[in-house]
Amino acid sequence: MTIAGPLLARLRALIVMALLVVVMSGSAFAQKLNPDGSPNPEASALHEQTLLKMFPRAEGRIDIPDTRAAVLIQPMGRTWDYFHEVLLHWGAAIVILGTIVLLALAYFVMGRLRIEGGRSGLKIVRFKTIERFSHWLTAVSFVILGLTGLNVTFGKLLLLPVIGPQAFSDVSQIAKYVHNFVSFAFVVGLILIAVIFIKDNFPAKVDIEWVKKGGGFIKSKHAPAGKFNLGEKAVFWLSLAAGVAVSVSGYLLLFPFSATNIAGMQLAQAVHAVVAVFFVALILAHIYIGTLGMEGAFEAMGTGEVDLNWAKEHHDQWLAQQLAKNSPIQPTATPAE
Image 1 (cartoon, helix red, strand yellow):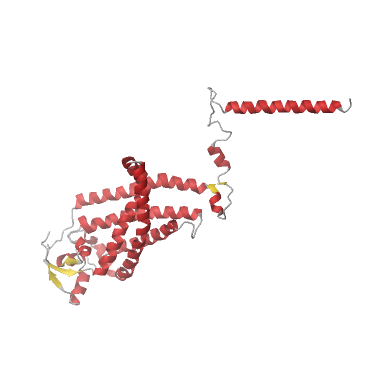
Image 2 (cartoon, rainbow, N blue to C red):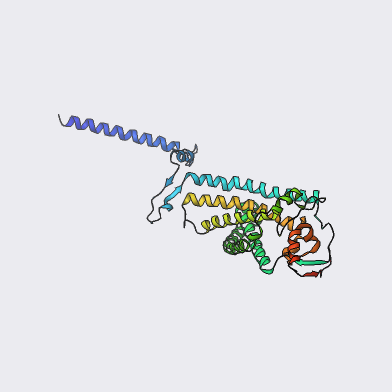
């Protein structure tokens, strides 16, 4: 009797505990059911946001040597996602559309900058074949990179609803490969431009006078300039800096984790996107000046030759140097605009 008593007491305690566990489990299970008895997936013990606040970095277990693959969630990933899906959309739209609006306003207010003395009927070589080749190689590859890159940012918002998921998937896949491979042509063009044109783009005393005279946009004042004026020099240096930035960041993305970690990859993508947006805005202004904004400017890179009066008005010191070298002057074969 002395042994049976404690055993019975322990047995009763175990039975009571088991009943309590069953009741509590049943109560918890009931809380995860809808009123109609169906499972309620939203009735979790911890909501996702609460869990993420408690454990901002979630890692799993893997069998491969690359431990970076074990990271499932990390704080900077959510920051990057907000940047890419929200801030970049609004920022890029404001910068690019704002640039287009400003250029359109400039055209309607100022009109096209005409050759004040009219066309002379004579032309002089401004850019050699290798100079124009390097420019167009870089320019064409930049346009392709810009369009395929903008698809990454705005494709889901603008193109997907128009052509549908399957077509958008095909277009985006092709655009990705085109973007990756054309980047090599862009880098070659960028190097050629740097080597060929850098000697003519250093600051000079004439640049100060060019600014004082309004950069050629004040008709009553003549702005002197060498081969490139200060505005063109600014475009050169900004384009060169932006080109290096998008190239370095782009190749870090093209060859992931080759030289950096996850945080470095996210930073590279942010730098690549932001610089590319401002690069597009800069080139839009450059294209405007070279086409609609100024009469005779496109011919410099189109045919390599410019009208003699155009050269006198926009690059008089360069023209004087060419005439001193007895550079040939040819009659214009095409009729004036």
